[in-house]
Image (spheres, rainbow, N blue to C red):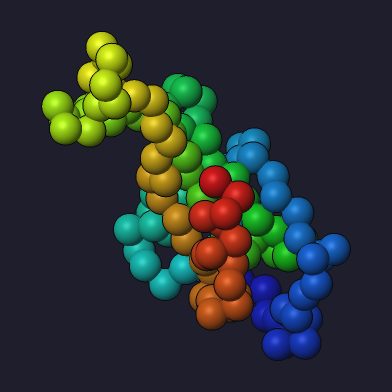
Length: 118
């Protein structure tokens, strides 16, 4: 993993770039949780190629700082949740399937930004 000083990783909004995953994920990404790292490295691109989900990677000055994986889903409405006159019981939804922020960028609001993006 390339070494970056804290000054190198300071950023402003102009330093951010969100890009849908377009091949192998960034090799140096580490959010500190192996389940999320493993998903990004082992399944994100495969799932995207199979139209299961789409992963978006946030780059800060060219360094992968965070990712969010989105997928379409549906929610079943119970009898008390349906508005009067609505016949259907399933409504479309967007699911945040995975979210990770690289340890070098944690506690800087990027996770919240990724949820806002989603």
